[in-house]
Length: 471
Image 1 (cartoon, rainbow, N blue to C red):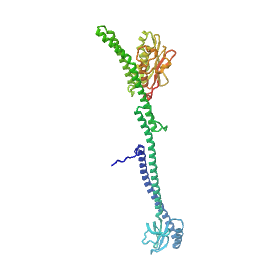
Image 2: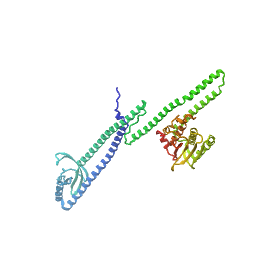
Image 3: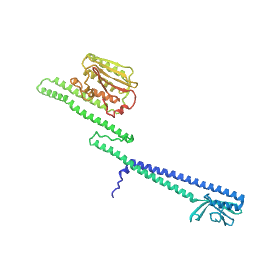
Image 4: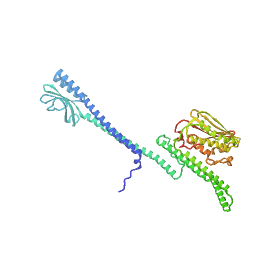
């Protein structure tokens, strides 16, 4: 037997929620309707009985005041009027004296229900009367009642209107659920198509947004930010792979040739200690490069701020300055500090120390002796601290400035200097982790490298890491 296939629109979550809402609404409406109907019915019956009791009391007063003949006249007149009540007056023998209701044998005082097979005033429609029987004395029985069909008709009208209301609400709810499901599925299909395109390799695709600001738009915006981050990481991975292949090819080639030459000299008995030392130096350089790459990857892969704590930038900068000042002065540089007091932030002390040290080494490596290198630290507003290194050396060209944080990038002026082109990349990664960015500024002359980090303990750093960082 072929299984029954339920249309997709009926399996949508939105339709199920709409259907559930309709069911809950219908159940609530039924319960409420039953309660309201019962209360209304009770109120109508109480109102009817109150009218009957009032009318009975009035007729009793008329009888006691003016006698039987006057009572007959009053009942006749009121029966022809608009009281909407039914009357019967019969003598002790049960004979009908006056009123629309036929004589009823065996009547006893009190409330009773009288079934009339045919109502003479409407051509034979059955009538059921709720009546109050009163003994006027001397065996006279006065009956005042009201047709229960009036209340029944009203109850039937209320029930019919209630059922129509529930039915209409159910139809509108189901229809609205279908429309909502179709709209929801269209947006889900758009997400699915985007995901399938990304799976096929098109990382430029993004989930369309409708500008409504609803939950789906918010989800689409979040997913698009995630895709932006993934795209940035993929671009970075491709760039790193290309850079590694390109920039490590030369030292690996040199290492190979040194080892090959050492092998040949070993066969001829020639001394090859210098070649081996050169090969070791090349290997150490390669290890340093890979260590730097690994360190950058570790910093960029940090997903929490567990290592963060209170960091005194003033003390940190003084420590770095004291560590590098002797060697810098021996090499002919002037290393000075311009560091304000009490520069506290939340951050990773080890990473910030290494980042500032990298900036000092970068200045020492790429500027000539005699250059003035200045470590600065200052407050920027009530909640941020800026620190870094600046020099009065030759600086860099304006067109090269945006590329200085690229892995393995080296400006034309610094290609003969030592280093692997990863120092500023590491500093930029540390700044990114702290919710900041590495700021590079050309001076006249020289270059300033620094970052501004907010002291506030917020999640801004982690949120910003989900976005492409502009450096």
